[in-house]
Image (cartoon, rainbow, N blue to C red):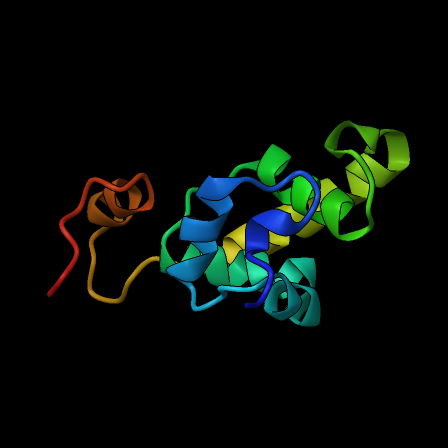
Length: 112
């Protein structure tokens, strides 16, 4: 059996289910994709964007504790996170400005 996503340092059972929605079910898949691509897929598929979750993932892939990220490194990761979030959370076509804002926070009903 392949190691689950949660076998990576700093990640738990919620990571298994969140990344599974994006088709990422093993630690090896996540490592192969890298933090940025995996997190973008996670956001597009199911996730709410959380900076701490993102940098915990980055630190975990480096074998470091989540709270090891500080200073300039944390600032640089924030820029990467913001860019990933912007790409992954583009409004759906055909929504008004209000509907797009509501969709971004998860209020608009998803089409079936």
